[in-house]
Length: 139
Image 1 (tube, rainbow, N blue to C red):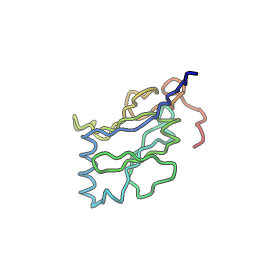
Image 2 (image 1 turned 60 degrees about the vertical axis):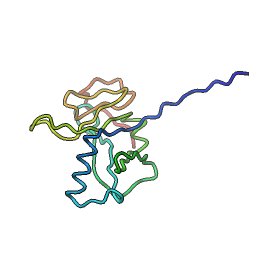
Image 3 (image 1 turned 180 degrees about the vertical axis):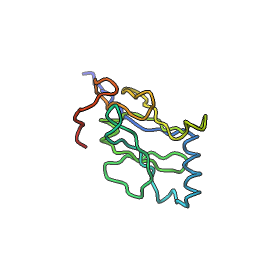
Image 4 (image 1 turned 45 degrees about the vertical axis):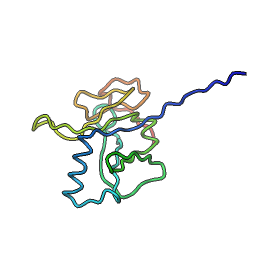
């Protein structure tokens, strides 16, 4: 009998070298020890399309968080959000001009983002960008 294997796609986050460099500089400037601090990547309800990205430092890791290490910095993300709302994601840093600079998020698969890159629809959503008055999934 032939065995059939079904591959399960695992969403993930990746961080560009530029973003890692900015995090390292920030940690040094703020006297933050990267061995004791995580960078949390996530999402919260809001924006014109339902969800906005968030990024913050924390010293607390929850049991449902996944860890991704890049350049000596540990990035954490809630597994539920990663696999049901956000999907695979790249964190980058843009400083092309004075007006538009900072951390930017690029979805690496399915899912839509608004034109400004600040808001997005959750995975599996068939709602158009900019939808409003909708109930959001329970976290």
